[in-house]
Image 1: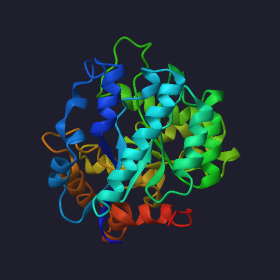
Image 2: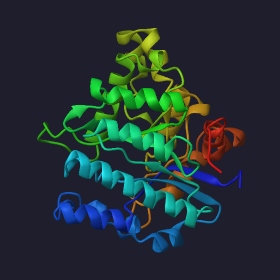
Image 3: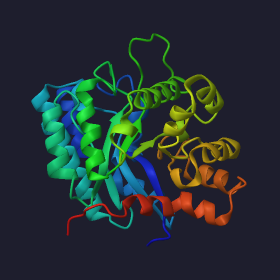
Length: 310
């Protein structure tokens, strides 16, 4: 199935995990109506919406245990959530070839243990998901750096997803997430992570946010070395269309660092933006071979050389 289109940023909220989270935080979804989308948790209904020839790398939405429970609770919930994700991959391998693990950000020793025991040699859990902030701190706060170091050693990717900076009173989904994503990328570059960890792979949501558009400001204000460091990120195509913006992302990051990713089933009702984004890629100036790189080949290239279980 090497020619199946691979969506690297598709979201779920598995039913067992959701039930456990609501037991400790009954009102957790009250301020996130979009998390009530039934296609996140009703997996058979979700599969029925996926077009033939498409596969999804699934990651949980940002209902993060560390925001609601103790360090030990968060570790246990993440472990069980990862088991549930792996079970979905095992049950539906032709639809979900891999999933992305959760880690408890209020318990870094447990997070590292989860990586060692659940992620390191697994063919079902392809990497871990981090968010642009954790517990009201930047993702580049020193206590979180061991996660980057560990994943670089393994050669498995980190998925980087934006969340709000809760200190700001005027957050909105349209612009705030893209700003926070950009700030996190800037912090990763500024901290020199790509220099310290040359094998580090980070897949950034929403096509790298503001970075491609402001790349010349990066070059002239931060200098050519940091400009080149930004190009080391991988990005997806989750822009809800917009061929020109996708082309801009490819022009900056390079076609080998852009992967098909949609945010499905969110973004465009009722089933997500997969078709719209695929049409946008087809409308760019990219050749058929370049489009194939984005749609599936780059994912397989990233996976080469990663140790997997039997």
